[in-house]
Amino acid sequence: MGHIRVPRLPEDAAFPGICPFHGDCLEGIASGPALAARCGQPAETLTPDHPVWRIEASYLALGIANLTCVLSPDRIILGGGVMQQSHLFDRIRTSLGVLLNGYIPTPELVRPALGNDSGVLGALAMAETRSLLP
Image (cartoon, rainbow, N blue to C red; front, side, top):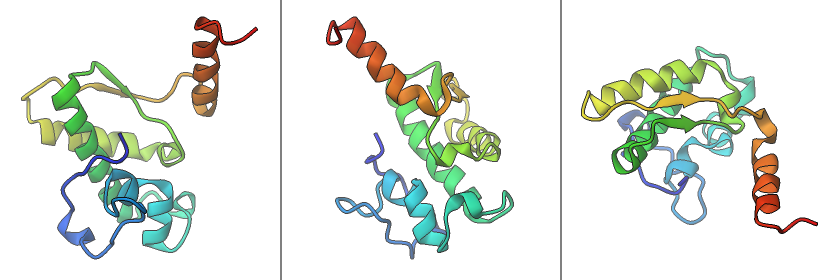
């Protein structure tokens, strides 16, 4: 889903994105490496009031709005390195509410219950239920 396209923000038009396939897909403009390329430093070193976080929240909300309009989820789990920035959740929720504008219920945005181990543990659980593990 990271390779979906979202409208570019006018104030971010000069950043070409980093995806080697699409340039400015969601991953190319909103991933941790994209933030580092845009700002010249790792995202985790940026202060919560850095202007790039508004851009980041807007792009993530645009991606989530697209998925919400197609899939109508009740809940969306947001994890990964960028989402370690706890201040992003409120910014994304606010932007998402504006984007959806009451057209469809806004899904609950949550962190992975298993933290940073969710991907690995989920893959192991799925493999076990499919009898792929001894």
